[in-house]
Image (spheres, rainbow, N blue to C red):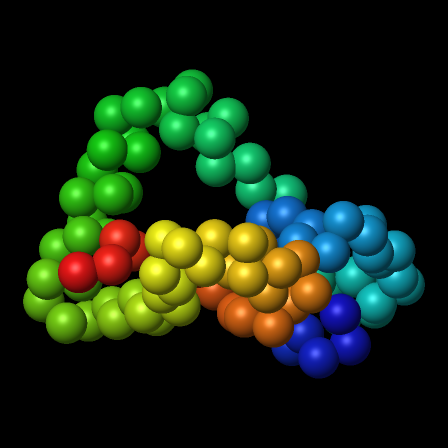
Length: 102
């Protein structure tokens, strides 16, 4: 929160570690910051047309090369247990996919 600029906005999307951090509200107040909780699933269900438009715009950005998603870490299907273990112990970042052997 201290790294957030004056009038900055912090978007709370989720808690990957399971721990819910404590927000120092004095840091929000002192520099006129904003904290907003985001529940995309709820929002998408409430406004499906806006969600479809958002996804269309995002996919167009991928096609145009303006947005470059990170490549997932791939594991052979036979290594599913190792993939789950690596996820649990945070040895991988981002998405993990299981791919059949060729």
